[in-house]
Length: 435
Image (cartoon, rainbow, N blue to C red; front, side):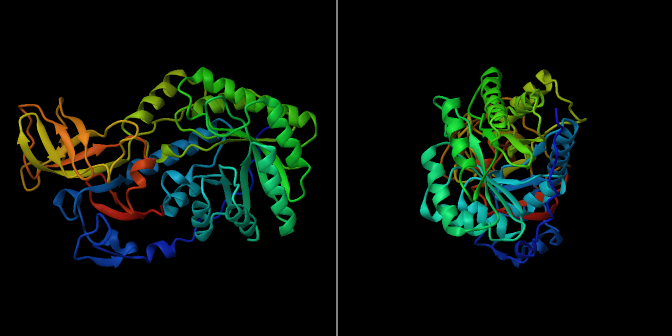
């Protein structure tokens, strides 16, 4: 079997436009009297535990963030894999740059706005993990390809979709092709061809269309709850790719095999590594949530991976880096406290957040302490958290509570700015998002 070959490394991004943005109290998490450049935040001496910023406050523990990025880089390298992380998770060019520094092959996006953000800050290889169908979306794809050295991949799962792309390709006459990954789906899932016959028809149509280039096959297994179901889908990707290779539908570039989830990325690695092709293969993961991980769903998924996978696992592992802090605002009744964080601030689509630790400003506590057992989120309103509180709880009005989150995507998209902190919760910088 030909080994995976990686294309040229991506250049680091141009972040001056982010660092120079002026921030003030109109931005959630910034003190009301502040007015400063984003690049100056790490020099202000702010500390979360000192109450130097208003709450709720989203923070990323910098040491854990960097360790997670390095772990995934080591994992992919050890197993002959590449990664094109989902940029939609964070929509933060500063974090894209960290991932690129750690060897990301591309950045994956889902919409044209996300593609524009990538290009604005210098990402040179992007996977649009959707099939563009609207006039504006398709035109934007071919306009993006006018940039010298820029590579764009997008998905296709139907002859109708290929026809739309082929028609636009004929009008642009661009020497830089739009690279296509044929998407393999499953019944009840999202997009993707539902049979091998349909997928092969799409592949043939792409291969026959000037301005389009058949580059590989992919799937999104993230909606599947069982490893065996993911294996069946991944094996279908491999089988369809083998059929396309046998027909001679692909050009001279290495063929991409790709899958997109974070909870089952081990299954993608194992199934793609077991495949055999005559041509070079790029075995590409598109996981995005690994960078900050979480305290619920992905923690459980990663525990399964460490127990079941046959792939090489580097020392250490993924840990939660993203927290949202809030004050105890009221204890109006027995068994319930109200905190200053709600649906506008924190994920709740994959389960309620988890109270991790607490801290009393101005008291005798040297550092935050683990939250005692029995404290559980009961409900979230727009701006309030109902925290189930044991009768012997130490919490008082004015205390700070750190919450672990689930599904990082839907916490990131609630924040235009997240603070980077060291292990003592001293602010070292800030991350700007573009949702």
